[in-house]
Picture: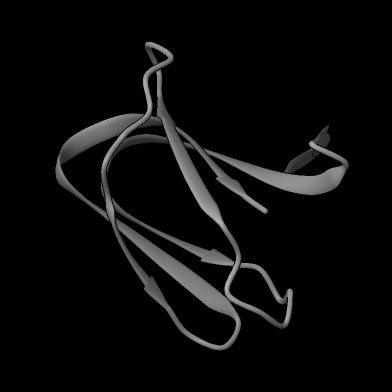
Amino acid sequence: MARFAFGGSSVQTHPFSNSTEVTITHGLGHKPLIYVVSSDGKMCWADVTYTATQVVVRFQNSTTGTIMVR
């Protein structure tokens, strides 16, 4: 997992490949902002479900890209 600065905040990046569902354990103590960028650099729509320490991101079709958790 890589981290980089985005608007002064730390962002966790989670690459994924050919997936319809990705589960990320974040442990941030709050509902983080989720950004999904496809492998061709476009923002993606996804269904996001939050639990206390995890985020589940679901796609309608199999997708490749990166999920950014802030």
